[in-house]
Image (cartoon, rainbow, N blue to C red):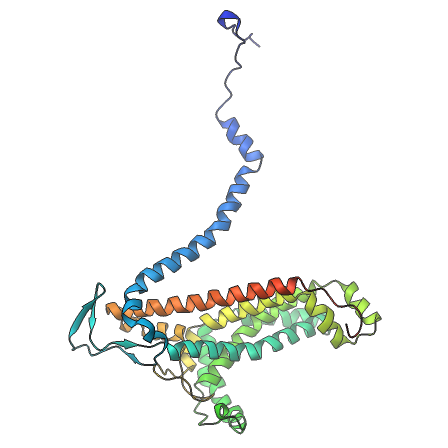
Length: 350
């Protein structure tokens, strides 16, 4: 190797410059690329959510100003007379007489989701417990596969099944029995298979596979020793499941329920096919026609796409649905944090 050139006035010689790619190689080998990639991947969902919120708010702002608080207090849904006089307000031109109230759609969204969860959560968790702890391994694997297949069925297929088969069956055999319950909301004309009850049950059918398959995977992860210890302390199988198995995966079960609720809140085409479509009225009984926010958007957005106030009102509806979903997830996160800090019981009665 050639000697380094001397520097005048007694200074030390400088080493030859390294290739420019060496710094990049050191950064790559040190894991810098992976850290930055993970950092960017962590921020992408947050930025996407913020982008959606901002765009919806900007598009909905004129409708928010024009509709005011009546949007959340009234049930009227009037698109106006297309031959009526045009009005310009808050930077948009629209037909006079347009009035929009989202109360029936908000209530319908919450009611159908509540019905779905009331039915789906105990069925899903019970099915998961049976599959994991009671069924033989081969049969459990087969039923688990069917659950996952059911979760992948397109919603339009389930909606068509609800219109042609499930809804008429409920109206003919189940609803008449429910109508005998001495509670005003359960009494009334049972209809022909479309309305609030059928919509909630169809949503339950769509929620059960997601919640059950997630719960099954969680329960499989519970160690065998705590369950055997509970049995040794005198607990029955039901007590072991209630006091050991389910608390052990409590936070995960809440997450599974939230996944199901998100499916119920945002489900569109299946509910649109079986809800009966009642834009301006809240369901007065369990069998009455109704509509949800998502079903209204998918059914009627194309009719107002050229109406400046109408299309911005639907943007406001979408914003309301997104806020409801985010609020649900925030509450779920708080519940997960509370459950995660709960100690497991030891012994009978503790």
